[in-house]
Image (cartoon, rainbow, N blue to C red):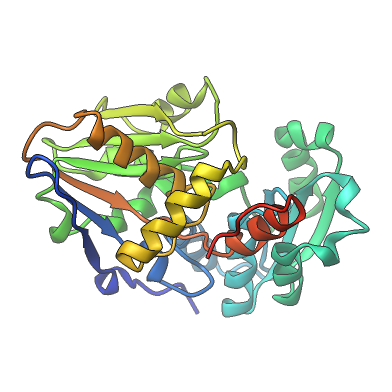
Length: 303
């Protein structure tokens, strides 16, 4: 059994704004699958299907992620869906005795994923970890953190179709760079791609350039204080956005991207008459974890 192509089911939803005849739409990749949502589905699509085409005798998927990783959550769901064994290498050995308090890791475990907790120092040297894992599990498919590799970039082209061709700007949140590299590689020649960095990583541009031969993308900071940091203004924006447009956003990726897009529109960054398409990259499972943190801090919750 392979992952099916589901791209024709993904709607484009207009975000009606009153600003210099600008048209703003969001492509609801979050609706592609209830548990393998957004860009994660397409990043895994060719990784998983190409691996299964090789017909491994003892298939095993190994990948990396933090305690609240959307990628870990999605890989575990793929494992359950396709009846594959999965192993998640989790950053932070201090979580090993507390994982039952973590909704993402509980979800992954319930999907059958085995969890191996490593120190942050070990995690920083994932290349060495990958070498050891390759020796221990020679038949395994080892997918990097965030799912970003050449197969992932190839999969992101499935987010583009006839409905996306008429937009001037394509916008996506950027974590590890695979999604923006895919959009850059396969978009129309006249389209500009804007990546909203949710992590302050000065090496991102060079990493993306290794995955796309085109120079049609721009990176804009949208970390709002740092990766995974949630400020009150993020919560306010996400809640207002859901009230006004009936679209849920999570606070780490798409929520920050949309907030920054609105700021840029107000600042006249986009020329009059621009057509802008933003990609909702899913990850709504992260709202639960975010609200746990916000509740501990006696702050407003994401609705």
